[in-house]
Length: 133
Ligand code: SF4
Ligand code: SF4
Image (cartoon, rainbow, N blue to C red; front, side, top):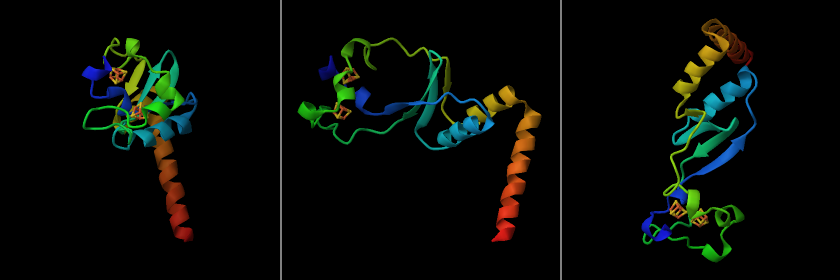
Protein backbone atom coordinates (compact mmCIF):
# COMPACT_ATOMS: atom_id res chain seq x y z
CA UNK A 1 0.00 0.00 0.00
CA UNK A 2 2.87 2.37 0.81
CA UNK A 3 3.93 2.22 -2.85
CA UNK A 4 0.67 3.99 -3.77
CA UNK A 5 1.08 6.66 -1.10
CA UNK A 6 3.02 9.92 -1.00
CA UNK A 7 4.17 9.23 2.55
CA UNK A 8 1.25 10.81 4.39
CA UNK A 9 2.44 9.50 7.75
CA UNK A 10 5.87 11.13 7.31
CA UNK A 11 4.48 14.64 6.89
CA UNK A 12 3.64 15.46 10.50
CA UNK A 13 4.24 14.36 14.04
CA UNK A 14 1.89 14.24 17.01
CA UNK A 15 3.02 14.41 20.60
CA UNK A 16 1.01 13.82 23.78
CA UNK A 17 0.27 16.80 26.03
CA UNK A 18 -0.45 16.84 29.74
CA UNK A 19 -4.20 17.16 30.17
CA UNK A 20 -4.92 20.88 30.61
CA UNK A 21 -6.55 21.64 33.95
CA UNK A 22 -6.65 25.36 34.54
CA UNK A 23 -6.75 28.63 32.63
CA UNK A 24 -2.98 28.83 32.19
CA UNK A 25 -2.80 25.32 30.74
CA UNK A 26 -5.46 26.16 28.17
CA UNK A 27 -3.81 29.48 27.45
CA UNK A 28 -0.53 27.67 26.71
CA UNK A 29 -2.39 25.51 24.19
CA UNK A 30 -3.89 28.67 22.69
CA UNK A 31 -0.32 29.85 22.19
CA UNK A 32 0.70 26.60 20.45
CA UNK A 33 -2.28 27.05 18.17
CA UNK A 34 -1.24 30.58 17.23
CA UNK A 35 1.56 28.96 15.21
CA UNK A 36 1.02 27.90 11.63
CA UNK A 37 0.56 24.22 10.81
CA UNK A 38 -0.09 23.29 14.43
CA UNK A 39 -3.30 21.67 15.59
CA UNK A 40 -4.39 20.09 18.85
CA UNK A 41 -6.72 17.16 19.20
CA UNK A 42 -8.25 15.06 21.96
CA UNK A 43 -8.63 11.35 21.38
CA UNK A 44 -10.08 9.00 23.99
CA UNK A 45 -9.68 11.79 26.53
CA UNK A 46 -5.96 12.32 25.82
CA UNK A 47 -4.59 15.59 24.45
CA UNK A 48 -2.06 15.75 21.58
CA UNK A 49 -0.29 18.45 19.65
CA UNK A 50 0.08 17.83 15.93
CA UNK A 51 2.78 19.59 13.93
CA UNK A 52 2.48 19.44 10.16
CA UNK A 53 6.10 19.27 9.08
CA UNK A 54 7.62 16.80 6.64
CA UNK A 55 10.33 14.46 7.87
CA UNK A 56 13.63 15.44 6.26
CA UNK A 57 14.21 11.80 5.25
CA UNK A 58 11.11 11.43 3.11
CA UNK A 59 12.18 11.57 -0.51
CA UNK A 60 9.98 13.75 -2.70
CA UNK A 61 11.18 11.78 -5.75
CA UNK A 62 9.77 8.38 -4.86
CA UNK A 63 8.17 9.08 -1.45
CA UNK A 64 10.41 6.51 0.19
CA UNK A 65 12.31 6.73 3.45
CA UNK A 66 15.97 7.56 2.80
CA UNK A 67 17.04 5.99 6.12
CA UNK A 68 14.71 2.98 6.02
CA UNK A 69 17.15 0.53 7.66
CA UNK A 70 17.79 2.83 10.59
CA UNK A 71 14.43 4.58 10.81
CA UNK A 72 13.32 5.39 14.36
CA UNK A 73 11.33 2.96 16.48
CA UNK A 74 8.14 4.99 16.17
CA UNK A 75 8.28 4.62 12.36
CA UNK A 76 8.83 0.86 12.65
CA UNK A 77 5.75 0.52 14.83
CA UNK A 78 3.51 2.25 12.31
CA UNK A 79 1.48 -0.16 10.18
CA UNK A 80 -0.49 0.18 6.96
CA UNK A 81 -3.54 -1.43 8.55
CA UNK A 82 -4.75 1.67 10.33
CA UNK A 83 -2.61 4.37 8.78
CA UNK A 84 -3.42 7.79 7.32
CA UNK A 85 -4.12 6.30 3.90
CA UNK A 86 -6.03 3.16 4.78
CA UNK A 87 -7.51 3.82 8.21
CA UNK A 88 -10.92 5.23 9.03
CA UNK A 89 -11.23 8.94 9.49
CA UNK A 90 -10.03 10.07 12.89
CA UNK A 91 -12.73 10.18 15.49
CA UNK A 92 -11.55 13.06 17.65
CA UNK A 93 -13.35 14.12 20.83
CA UNK A 94 -12.11 17.66 20.13
CA UNK A 95 -10.03 19.19 17.34
CA UNK A 96 -8.59 22.73 17.30
CA UNK A 97 -6.85 24.07 14.22
CA UNK A 98 -6.15 27.63 15.39
CA UNK A 99 -6.02 29.84 18.48
CA UNK A 100 -9.38 31.49 17.75
CA UNK A 101 -11.10 28.14 18.17
CA UNK A 102 -9.35 27.64 21.50
CA UNK A 103 -10.31 31.16 22.57
CA UNK A 104 -13.96 30.37 21.86
CA UNK A 105 -13.64 27.10 23.76
CA UNK A 106 -12.10 28.89 26.74
CA UNK A 107 -14.89 31.46 26.74
CA UNK A 108 -17.41 28.65 27.04
CA UNK A 109 -15.37 26.71 29.56
CA UNK A 110 -14.41 29.59 31.83
CA UNK A 111 -17.04 32.18 30.92
CA UNK A 112 -16.63 35.39 28.92
CA UNK A 113 -16.27 37.54 32.06
CA UNK A 114 -13.44 35.43 33.45
CA UNK A 115 -11.73 35.66 30.09
CA UNK A 116 -11.92 39.47 29.98
CA UNK A 117 -10.86 39.80 33.61
CA UNK A 118 -7.79 37.64 33.13
CA UNK A 119 -6.81 39.32 29.90
CA UNK A 120 -7.08 42.70 31.66
CA UNK A 121 -5.00 41.45 34.56
CA UNK A 122 -2.31 40.20 32.20
CA UNK A 123 -2.31 43.49 30.26
CA UNK A 124 -1.89 45.45 33.53
CA UNK A 125 0.96 43.20 34.60
CA UNK A 126 2.83 43.74 31.35
CA UNK A 127 2.28 47.53 31.59
CA UNK A 128 3.82 47.50 35.08
CA UNK A 129 6.75 45.45 33.80
CA UNK A 130 7.33 47.87 30.93
CA UNK A 131 7.33 50.84 33.30
CA UNK A 132 10.01 49.21 35.43
CA UNK A 133 12.36 48.96 32.45
S1 SF4 B 1 1.97 3.64 6.27
FE1 SF4 B 1 0.11 4.45 5.27
S2 SF4 B 1 0.35 6.68 5.29
FE2 SF4 B 1 2.36 5.79 5.71
S3 SF4 B 1 3.38 5.67 3.71
FE3 SF4 B 1 2.37 3.68 4.07
S4 SF4 B 1 0.36 3.87 3.12
FE4 SF4 B 1 1.16 5.96 3.37
S1 SF4 C 1 12.39 8.42 9.21
FE1 SF4 C 1 11.57 7.55 7.35
S2 SF4 C 1 9.77 6.39 7.96
FE2 SF4 C 1 10.29 7.78 9.63
S3 SF4 C 1 9.10 9.62 9.30
FE3 SF4 C 1 11.05 9.94 8.31
S4 SF4 C 1 10.78 9.29 6.20
FE4 SF4 C 1 9.07 8.46 7.40
